[in-house]
Length: 252
Image (cartoon, rainbow, N blue to C red; front, side, top):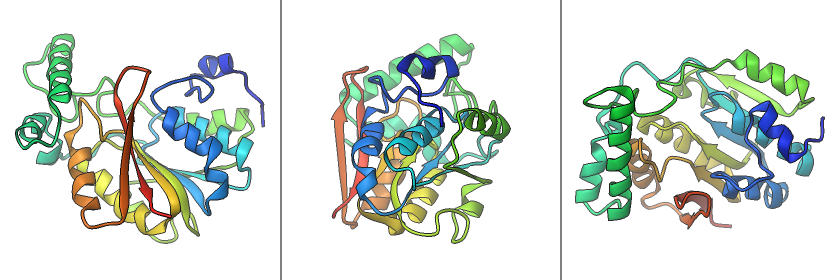
């Protein structure tokens, strides 16, 4: 395994866990907590592997016996969306008091910017992200970079979540921590239903889109899933760009 200085992450175009950024909470947990929690680590929504490779690097430093499993189709979003993922659902959430005035102002400004930049009158779940429908990805490229970095603790689980988040497809034992970066309502629900029963006490599920300006379905899925469960929903406001960062903890 290569030992990297901070600037090298930027050259290699992967997330820099040594510098303050939007995933600080996640990487702090990996660096400082995950070694003492039984189980491996999981990432749902790998895309180009920027956080996946960084997660593998951090684990190799602090918990070299743990593996990180990356779940993705590596072919982009599913061809059919659901109403929960319509960006206009943010307005419904705001009317119901489920998102703040500050968030809905940011959502509206973001939608305005994106419509201008893309020359569109309306946005949907495939056009609301700067990454489009996430087809610009290659498992082979990620594997090649992992090999170059001499990282041997990555495992890919390729395919739709409903076909891969099943017994025998990922970690054999418990899960110590997981990051959900899979945007859509159905993906979040499937991932939560798979991960939560396997999550060790004290384990974390980082919810990358619970505070989102683009994907309302993630918040809807999380809120419905945790109802009645012994789940601690926590957040901080980061000093990176002032956004809320949310995660679930399983009470130890």
